Amino acid sequence: MTDYGRVLQFGVFVTPSVELLANTFEVAALADETGLDLIGVQDHPYQAKFLDCWSLMGTLLARTERVRVFPDVACLPLRPPAVMAKAAASLDVMSGGRFELALGAGAFWEAIGAMGGDVRTPGQAATALEEAVEVLRLMWSGERAVYSEGEHYRLAGVHPGPVPAHRIGIWLGVGGPRLLRALGRSADGWVPSSSYFPPEVLPGMHARIDAGATDAGRDPSSIVRAYNVFGQVSDTPSDTLFHGTVEQWVSQLTELAVETGMDTFVFGTDGDDLTQIRRFTADVAPAVRAAVDQHRGTGVQA
Image (tube, helix red, strand yellow):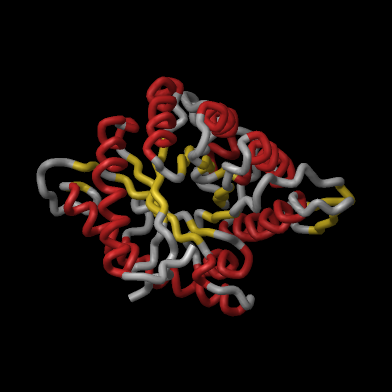
């Protein structure tokens, strides 16, 4: 059993589709009004009907007052990290500290290549992601000039800035052993998706993150463990994970928190259905918070 004792967070996963834009604005308003912590936005620039993730995130931050926004996850091969750092810091400053940054090493390589991005082997993609984390930190450092000499990214005396309004979390959407350990050493959070990594594989992945953190002298419980959960809340029980009644959802997410170590749940559903999101926000999230608090008793840490 693994429970890192972190305060739970809940969010919603939105699709940056031109056809869903009005709905996306309603989802953002709902998230802001009802106390959701996060809005995660897909970043697939090569999708013809998708709006630019970063432009949409800026608009959502401008239309909300409390909820935090992050790319879920940013497509590194199409977004140079030094420029991404500037964009992230700018959004954070303009929103009063409501931006987080989640990165992916890359996927859908044919589409990335068609758009002019580097097509990388798994090893190259991993190296580039590790280098990008260093570049981001340097670009937010407030130093007069910064340097980094990498295989994929370099900084040669650039004047970094602006400094973000708060310490932006760098979360990684990774799954391989090498990058999980690298995450533990240097990143702030982990963002796997249930469609790729079902609950039964999570404990072994936590172990690799924890080993990397311990090797670097870090506390494993300082790392956010966010889970994109895709499904449907219904009135009918189901044998399919993340499909079923409110009671089933509460049981499953509570177990993921107190038995499997996840602390943040970002809900995604077909068509970004507003009714589904309302049910998750009003019925599931508060009940999971209460159940986890009851299980833990006192002593929950931030």
